[in-house]
Length: 74
Image (cartoon, rainbow, N blue to C red; front, side, top):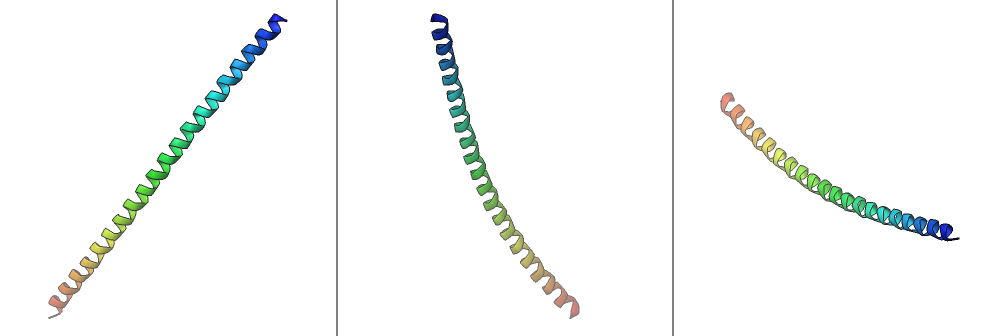
């Protein structure tokens, strides 16, 4: 009977360790997911800024080209 009790105690401890490991893993996954979500948000913000800059540069270049064409035509 003592060996059965000892085996059940070991089993209970093993289950506790597994539950602890599962909870710790879930916390790590949740944290990583939050980090990735924040990184994606930052990347999208940076991409939007870069697109705005590219649009501004494109408009300025078009205006400069237009002025140069007007000077060359005269």
